[in-house]
Image 1: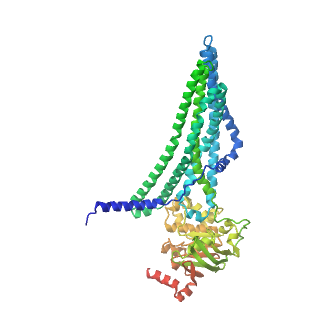
Image 2: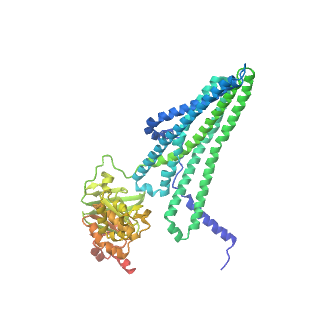
Image 3: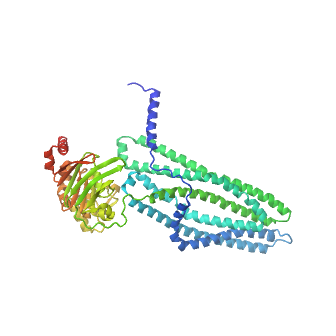
Length: 616
C-alpha cells in the first residue's frame, strides 16, 4: 500500500465537494421576480369577503372604540396637569384630579374589553380564511395532471400546502386588524396634533416623508429576499421527503455521510438567506428610531420656545409628547407590517402559482359522460412525446375487442407503461387518438372514463388506516360483506384473518408492516371490488413470490373474466394465456399474436422467453 499525498487527498476532497455542489445546483423552484402585485393582493384578501359581513363590522367597531379611548387618555392627562395639578391661578384641585383619574381608568377598561373582543373575532376570521385557502389549494392539486408532478419533488408540493399557507396566518389573524388600528390611530393623532397646535404638528411630521423615502428603497430587496427564504425552505422539505422515502437505499449504499453533507449545505444556504432577509427587516427599526428621535428633538426645541412665548401650556406639551410617541409606534408597526406583507406576498405568489396551474388533462367544454362501456378499445396511429422531440410511442395502432386480455411485452423503455397511461388518460396523445367503444376519450369526462378503469400497479400504495378501508377504497359505498367477498376471491382473506385485528387492523403509511405480496393481494381485492370494465395490471405480480403467484392465478381468472384487460409483465410465465401478446421495442409494435404463434415466429418474444428460462 502507498500513502496518498496531501495534494491527492485535497483533490479527492475537492471532487467530492464538487459532486455535492453539482447536485445542489438542481432547483425545482424558480424565483418569482416581479413588482408588488396589487391585483394579487386583492385576490388574497378576497378570501375574507365571505366573513366580512358576519364579523368585520363588530371588529371595526371594537377597533374604533379602542383607538378613541387610547387617544383620549393623553388629552385628559394634559387637562389634569393644567387644571388640577398645576393650574395657572389657584391651588391644585384634588376633586378634578380624582374625576379625571376615574375616567382614565374607565377608558382603560373599555380599551381592554374592546381589544379582547377584537382579538377573538379576528382569530376566528383568520383561521377560517386559512382553512379556505389551504382547502382550495389541496383541491386544485388533486386535479393537476401527471406532468405537473413529474416536474416537481413531493416535498416542493408539500411545502406550498403547509409552510406557505401557514406563513399567511399571522397576516390574517393579526396583521389586517393591526393595519386598520394603526391607520385609524395615525389619522386620529394627526388630526389631534393639528388641532392642538398646527405649527408644531407640521414641524414634527416633516420627518415622515424622509422616513418613507429611505424605507421604500428597501422594499423590493426585502420582497426578493423573503422569496429566496421560501424557495430554500422548499428545497429542504423536498430533500427531507426524498431522504425519508429512500432511507433504505441510503443505508444500503452507506451514503449517510454524503446525505448529511448535502443537507448541511442546503441548511447553511437556508440560514444565510434567512439572515439576509432578517437583516434587511431590521433596518426598518433604526430608520424609524432615527426619524422619531429627530421629530422629538424638533418637538422639545420648538415646544420650549412656544411655552416661553405663551403659545403652549406644559400640559399640552406633555400631551403633544405622548401623541408624538404614539405616532411613531404605529409608523414602526406599519413598517413591520409591510415586512410581514412582503413575506406573505412571497408565499402567496408561490401558492397562486400552483392554483393558477391549469391541468393539462381536463374535460373539454361540452364533454359528456362516457356511458357504460363494453370494452372495445382502439389506438389509432398514436404518437406520444413526454418531451418535445423525443417520441415514446411511434405510430401505435392496436384493436382490442371487448373481453380480450392483451399482454404488453418489451424491454424497459419500450413504451408499455406509456400505452396504459394514455388509455387511462393520465396524458393525452401528441398525435392520433385512443377510442373506447367508438368514443374518443378526449371527448368524454375524465371522471366517467377512469371510474370504468381499474389499475393494479407493481408498487401498490397502501394508505394509513384499516385493511377494510384500504380495500373499500376501490368502491367507497361497498358493504363489509362485499369487501370480505373481494378479499376471499383473491385469496387474501386467510392472511387478513391472521392479523391482530382482522379486517380492522390498522396499517402504517404505505403498509410497511405488510409483505410485498400481501400488499399486492390487497390491491387485487381493491380492483375486484371496483368492478371495472377495463382492468390494467402493471407488473402486478412482479413482487409476489412464485408460491403466492400460483395461489392467485385462479383469482386472476375470476378478476379478468368478462373484462378487457391489459397486462404489463416482465415475468413472461404470467402472460401465456393472454389472447394477444403485443411485443414493443423503442415505441413501436414489432410482433403480436398468441404465445404459441410468437414462439413459432422465432422473433423477439421467443428470444425473451428463452432468455428467462436460461436464468431460471
